[in-house]
Length: 356
Image (tube, rainbow, N blue to C red; front, top):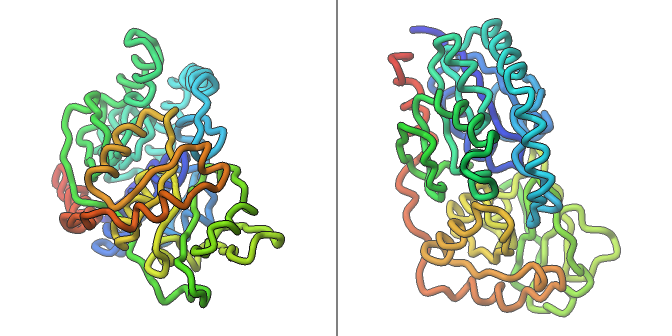
């Protein structure tokens, strides 16, 4: 059997893209333990090692620019557009770099979530190239730019070289990709034994906002929510008595903590919502109106998951009580995940164009 050599392009825009692709790569490695992996991602190596269960080569050159974040819940549309224009101005040179890199590594398959660099580079070398995503940058910027804008033309040309796009639940409509296939939810498996929660007589809420910077809120005002105890990453020493700091890293992930809490306070994003879905943890979410993905995720939350939203103003003032209580009393539960999306995606990858 041919040795699997996979190059994976993972966007560094937050942790959601890594949360999607890492379980698929782990499943492929389980099926092909002798496989060789090159990871193209600018996220910290420690974060990659925390989610990937195998050794890999790493190239941390940027694979896309995503969107400029003022915080995890506030995007900078104007700076995002400027940054994307600047990045795409050197697109040809960037693709040529990827062609050289791929030629040297000689992959049998290229996977991307959802860097536009991967597809034209793979096509130039006749290497199978697949995407996996719930959003793409052409769709995001289509909400911000005129349809004739050169940014959209360049992104469309790059994404058109994708041979197949796999789409888990909570995916945006992405018409730029010709061939698509829906798959079940992809999510990490929790290990609850890795965490012991504080012994308190209150309900417990985990407050977490992923890899794009926790937004500012009045932590002292949480003392007024005396029915709740809050787990907050990097909490300072002068926090109220109902706040406990928590540190995530290679030995502890948010999904490991979720089985011990009553609610997760977060922004709507694939990674955190998938983990709440997997652990059946209600969600108190904060609006993210500047991001084009938000209306779709808001609708999904309201229709499918036990959740309640709050405005950014209420979040900043720590007026969380209504959302915390409301999400625990939604009259429906979590839907079935539909199977193991990572295993389904891994099998599709292994059988694509008769690789396995």
